[in-house]
Structure formats: C-alpha cells, structure tokens
Image 1 (cartoon, rainbow, N blue to C red):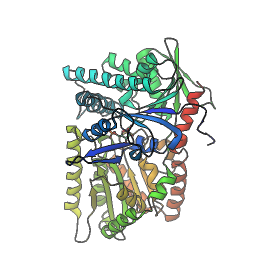
Image 2: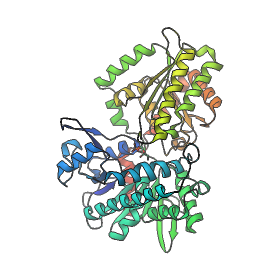
Image 3: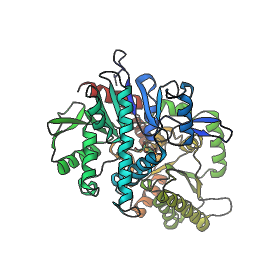
Image 4: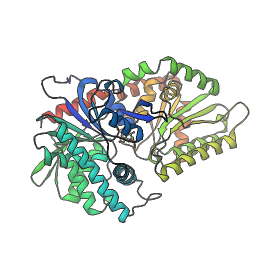
Length: 490
Ligand code: F6P
C-alpha cells in the first residue's frame, strides 16, 4: 500500500462514541477493562502508533468510575495498549438521549431503512429533548477535541453519533484538518427526508463541516451526495478519476471532498488469534456438538438490520424443502446482545431465541440439534466457529460493510462458501465469489444455502481463496492511513 505514518506531523486524533476499552465495576469496587466491541472499534484498534489520542464517551458506570479514577487525565495505558484514550464523562441523561435516542433509535434506523415498523417516526416533545441531548453530546466532543488537538492537526471523527462534530469543531478550530467517516450505509434522499427538515439539514451540514467525509462504499457516498444536492441544493461533482476522492460537494462556497475506503479484515491478527489455546478448546467443544455434519455459521450482534430471524427462517425452509439435509447439517448461530436498553432490541433478541427453539422443536432428533444458538458474547468461540464453517450466512437488510463476511472465509479451515446479502457494503467487494441474496427473500436465501452446501469442493476452495484476498485488500491500518494521507492533501 505504501502509506506510512509521518513522524514529523502531530499524531492524528480519533473521536468515536465507543472507545477501544470499556470497564465493568464489581461490587467490591474492582474495575475490569475489556476490549470494546464492533466493527469500527476492531478497525481502529489495529492502528498502534498511527493514531494519537482517542476521544470517546463513557458508556456506563464502570467507564465513569475509570474516568474519575484517572482524575481528568487519559486512561491507564495498561488498559488501552499504551494508546492515550480520553473518555468523556457525559451526564447519563444526555448520553442516553444522544446514544439510545437520536443515534440508535433514529439515525441508525433511517440509514438501515428500518424507520417504519416496528419503530415509527414520532417527532414529539421527547424527540425534541433527545435532539437537544444529541447536540449537547456532540458539543462536548467538539470542545474536548478543540482542547486536545495540536495546531494544524488532523482529526478523524467517526460515525452517526458524532455527525454534528465536524462543523462544531471547525467553528472552534479552523486550523484543523477534519475528516468524518460513516461506518453505516447512508439513506437515499427519499428515505432520508423522513427526518424533520431542520434536523435532516443540520446532520448534513454537520458532516459538511469536515474537509473530507468518507464512506465504506461508493453507494453510500453517492447517497450522501444525493441528499446534499436534494435537501441543501449543494453542487455535487464526480471527482477526477485516479485521485483519492469519489465526489465533491460545494455548499455556500465551501467544498467538502467525499472519499471511499472499504475497511478490510485484520488478517494477521485474526489468523494468529484464531489459533490460540482458548479457541482450540472451544473448537473441540463445538465439534463435539456438531460432529461430522456440515456447518452453517453466522455471528452477529442481535440487531434488527442483521436480519437474523429471516436467516433462521431460511434455514427452516431448507430443512422443509430439502429433507435430505435433516440430520446432516447444523446451523451454528451466535447472536450477541446489543443495545439492550432499547425495547425494540430486547424484543428482537427474544424473537431470535423463539424462532431457533421452534426449529429445534420441529426438526430435532436424538443426537441432532439443528440450531446451536449462543447469545453470550465470546470472541474466542466466534473464532472457533469461523474455523469450522462450511458455509457463512451473512444476510443483513442493509449494512455499511459487514466485517464478518470478510472474516469467516479468511479463517475457515474448510474453504467456506459465503451466502451474502446484496445489501451489505461487503457485496461490492466480495460479490463475484459470494452467493448473493435478496435479504427479504427467504426462499431465495434457502436455495443459496443449498447451493453453498452442495458446491463442489474445488470451486469452494478457490472462491474462498479469492474471498480471503479481497477481504484483506485494505487492512485496518492502511484504511486509516489512506484517509490521513488524503486529508493531508486538502
Ligand atoms: O457503525 C456502526 C457501528 O459503529 C459498528 O462499527 C459497530 O459494529 C456497531 O455500530 C456498534 O454499535 P454499538 O456501539 O451501539 O454497540
């Protein structure tokens, strides 16, 4: 890739809601640090010394206690792999309004095209309170970054939680070079317009405060550009071919460049981690359960956009329509709890378990459990499942990228076939060798599972080899450094 961190320039600041570490507080006052979860954190965690201070939010009581023990300084480097991490102790009601309210119940649902049923737009006094909280939370980040950044430094702001930060930070520190990265899809204008007009505009203008705004695929960058054109009347141009940008957006005399950086899997880390003793141990336990049967693996946060229920129904249809698979296949489904403060997520989590239990009750026999569902987050067990996958099922309704789609083919020891939603960002890179499905089409997904299970071994291995290569085309470190380099050419 040929991109290097430049030791002459100040290190790049990173800002995100979730940081690289989170803490739990035991009753006896002991604090235990744990690596933060999710695709964005795994991407940014691979940076080592390429990134400077990471500004993030305290997510719960454990984090707040760690911030208080740090006494306003950065967290204990022993917990953060030596990286300076500044956690902001935002008051719990403001954090809740910003994170559970606007970010996860509004913007997330808009961009994943889920803002209809079961979560319908309601713009009442509670929404106004949440929007005020979201603004306060974004302002706290802008203030912290303005205080932290060296003159002329670069700041990379992550995601939909912080969409107002670029413009707020520019007001405070016009000397900085500001980038914003969206890890989600971006909604097309007809669906984005479901937001109240003033708020839809503020979110766009917040991101346009950046010098450069980047996305995981050209499709999402194009949707953002379309929203700017339609809602703001901004001028959108395609950028010159061969350069680092995809589009430019000019509004009221200022131009923001739009880039595309398709975050890849961290192959070196995952290959090493997947062969440690704790993973071997879990692999042995899973093999015991599954035996010699073919294995369909999925690993997700329990998230409505991940479409886990339709995935299970597709597996059920496979067993119904193709009875030859009964007793010969196991679906290993890991669905880890996510955003459990929100009722809509709790209900979905319960539904996932209900549907899996229903399949086991309907088809299970002595010695064969058709679905092995685990809901307790265990990274080592996820890697063990990756290793034994014959088929990976990744069927989100819509997804910014989906790193699991990249990770399973990389780690599988069986040269696994990938059944992938065409609506995942990863489909843009893996589409030639994956079996693409319409995520709403349960029958089509069941048929793709059958094709994947019956794929000729040589074909499967050669496809898996190409998938693994595509999955690591842009390592997390290069994903970050290419953004920094592009930002420096502003
Ligand atoms: O952009 C989406 C994202 O930040 C992912 O990177 C990550 O998987 C997920 O959201 C994490 O969500 P949360 O921080 O709410 O658990």
